[in-house]
Image (cartoon, rainbow, N blue to C red; front, side, top):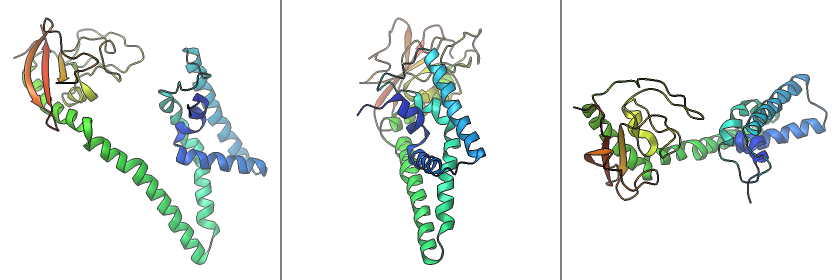
Length: 254
């Protein structure tokens, strides 16, 4: 089933494990006419924030009626999630304090177990897998080695000569500018990467170094243009793959 942008904006962008119970509590309290003035105010602020974010995206051309067009929505709407989670916290507080004796202990253990499971399965394990497995481990291992080479090789300025505005991206004037998978090499030399999306055109500045993985290339390009780049060295990846570092012609170096 294709995800609706409205569903993402109202439910799944707010961490669905917490947002679904929160909306259930909201519906239950509304049905029983137990909503306080403070709850009404919080819910109004939450829905108002969603409406303003949706209006901003719509003004920029986003089509909320187009099913499946959900890329980027969680980060735009998810910032308001803590307001919605207040009702999830209310539910947990009710469960924690309602039961006494053996039943109370059992309920509290169940609540702690559920929260522990969420923490482990939704946060700790995915992060561990992301940081220590697959392509990322290979790219980061190679990037650490490339960063040592770049720091030794680069002899240019620490900043760009002039600031070029970048739309829809977070770009600094730091140098060297290093393009490569995961932007890891740029991070390790405290420079500037290509931006959130791979490929040319996202960063307004030319790259000083280009970091390629042999066999897969980078940004849809299998190999750099040798008329614009000089080969620097080969670098092994974290999982044994071969990477190659290139320097753009004209970049000051030792």
